Structures are given as structure tokens and as C-alpha cells.
Length: 169
Image 1 (tube, rainbow, N blue to C red):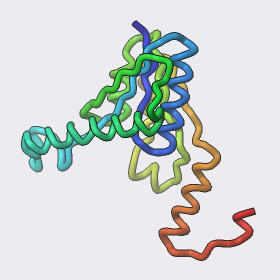
Image 2: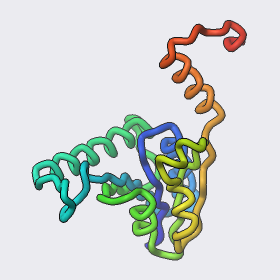
Image 3: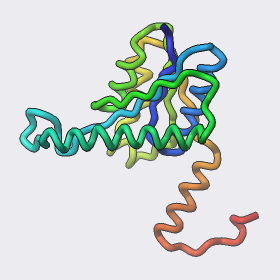
């Protein structure tokens, strides 16, 4: 059965993508599958810094709790008018999403946030990976116009810069 698969991270861009995926699932009468990818700290089994089974269980549990929290934040006490499946996957976000949306009739929804040169260097783009590897249609959701204002305010507060009264107008 075809479904709408959406990547969930908990950030503002992820919430926008989750809302858009719920709308698409409702319009297409499809199931909504929210996927949160997680990775073990210090590598996985077989690596020199491999962590033990209890640590992996804690990571898996934390990822499931985070996914529940994000879905509660996105939809509140109400539920979207579609069936929602929550899935936590150990792996990189791009590969996890492509694997979850294997069917050609699926729709894959990802947030495409603003990416400066430093972010591109440190963290590869999930949207680019998905566009290059997905077997199904991909819908990229641009960031909310308010997101850049939020990030600017956050940077200003982090650096303890004074507020310019003209920004309030």
C-alpha cells in the first residue's frame, strides 16, 4: 500500500515538512509514515569505539521518545485525519528515508532548510541525498519565512547583542 513518508528531526523545518506530509496524505488518502533516523555514539558494532548493548537500547529508546514528542508537538492533542505510523531507524537520515519509501507509488517529503557553507561542510544535505537516490517522487518543503527571523534572534541572543528597536516594527 502506498504511503507518504516524511523525515522527522524535531527542528522547525522538520515540523513544516511533517505538516505538509499530513496534508498530502489526507489529500491522496494514503498512510503517513514519520521516520526519525538515529545513530549510535562513537560508531556501531565492529568499530573500535563500539558502544555496548545497553547504550544502544538507551539510544533507541531516546529516539522513540523524541519521535513521540515531535508528533505530539506537531499535532497536539488532536490527530491528523490520516493513519500515522511512527518509525525509528538506526542509520543516516537520507538512507533511512530512501529505504522507508521503496515503493514507486510512495511520496517522500523532506524539509529543505537554508544551508550555509559551514553547515554543508559539517552535515550533508538529507534533501540532496534523497533527491539523488529515491525511487519515488520527492517533495521538498522550503523553510518557513519565520525560521530565518527565529535563527537571527537566536544568534543575537547567543552573542548577547542588543536588540535594535527597528526590528520590532
